[in-house]
Length: 225
Image (cartoon, rainbow, N blue to C red):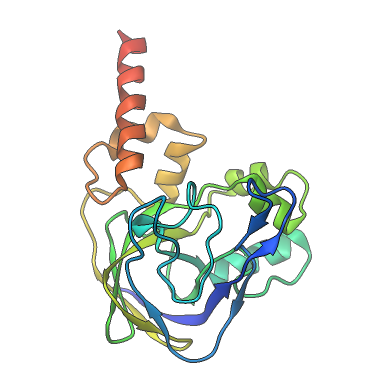
């Protein structure tokens, strides 16, 4: 199984952003020192971030058990830094963990990562870009640009709580056999809906995504008939 490393643990505080749905956002995440506790925060709409001290403002669209931790690869940040012609610090995409040595886009839905000695995470879904993300970066046409590249980063749920700190080793300890990666799932939800039927049997998807898949597959079946 693959191994990588946590480069930084990033925590956000509430700040004003006019374009955000609530006028405030927790997307501005900064690296912190020392071990940080991580646990399941509770169901969507009630639970916020799984990372202690991290702020989630819009609980209707973000946070909860199935989006407890957001991970983005330093390698992918470096690609975007080259494309945008600017430095991109860890946490600038709103990620809780910035990693290196792991193919986050190639992670399978339901794949499990052991982070450090205690924390066990499970891949749930890709990040879908929104206007808050675009406004935060200040890049014109950012949602379309980010979607076209299809390197979205991954959300995780917490299976076993623990702590995380910069430098922790990350080990991929299990991978399901369905073949649906974060990248493919992102394309299914955005630019390639023909991929949606392949998600129908993926148990680790969040329930709200499963409902979306069922409705889409039913519509596709009805139109085909």
